[in-house]
Length: 460
Image 1 (cartoon, rainbow, N blue to C red):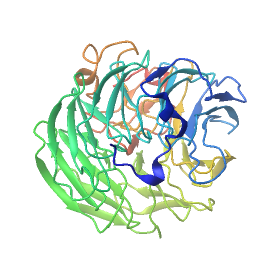
Image 2 (image 1 turned 90 degrees about the horizontal axis):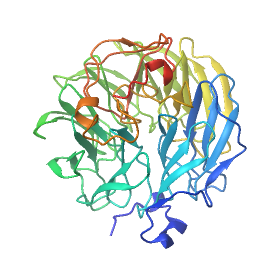
Image 3 (image 1 turned 60 degrees about the vertical axis):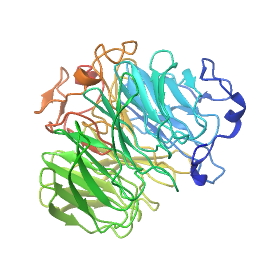
Image 4 (image 1 turned 30 degrees about the horizontal axis):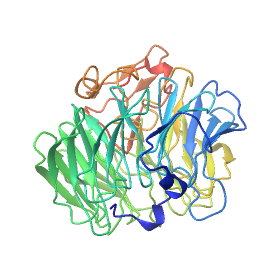
């Protein structure tokens, strides 16, 4: 039986479906207020929490802030962050369902209902396979085209809220649980068999890993950051923060690990040595927002409702956006010179990345936006590569089409990211990070970057 986290369990009416794994018609879930999403579009999910307002997936016009369409899951809302590939959006629901939705129209393509508990982990898509962790203590590999299960990894003894990172044919993720497994796992991406386990963490590992330069970077809920060798699973170094619980997921950029969490402190840590470079202590209260790094600036939200822009090299504050009155627990997204971030009051903000001034805001009517925004330039044929992260745990993509097998064009070949700035046919660029994998935190190229078609359909 899954070691359930009570406040997150939203299984509800799907428990009666038994062994039903894939549903190809919408039934209860579906799109409302539909208009086609054209041009640069933001996708973000809302979670109901304990409130009576809706928990819905939104498609929002990036230029105007107008809502193009809404997609309502069966129940419980969405904490998972969307991933878009080839015009299809993948997202997990708190009702225990993995959804595939048409990115233009908001209509459902398929749903995978095999999980018996919530799906707050964000989907990773590579080699035609969707990898996602669930509250039922299982990591699932699902065919991206059909929604059928390829394999299920059931070895963990705790929930999986960690978003999987896929690099060189291996899936990396952490596990949690009140009395369960506090382990980092490495699993073969094609077969679902264990490659190694790292069991040193003394607290649950609900954060998501970043894989860069042959190391897995991941933090446990006790505030210890680990650098683990990808091939062997042995610890390279560890760094103990003064955070006593629930830090956010690390981001790696230009040889530096950025980590933010419960102590309301943003850390910059040398990725090779594990030594501290600087601290940023301006936030007054903790947040669940993970750092985003773009063009030498670190963006992070705080629980007092402030979005901070911090110089990545020095730790000095560039600006602070203080308009929100609710916590900013969503990880910011930077695209085309705009920072997008959601609040726990259900408001999505667009903020100028250079000045910190507000461009627009939209109240989604959701109880809270903890899902991180995804930006896609061409909803019909584009993807969210680079939208939140170059290292891409939150929306990891591959260089093959949806129907391809994981081994054909997939995990090992496709997950090696570039080491220098890459410019696409539309002039968009993404800052290089000497990385070879994925991460929950965010590294993006600013300036001309609007993801999707402008990135030459590059799915790493």
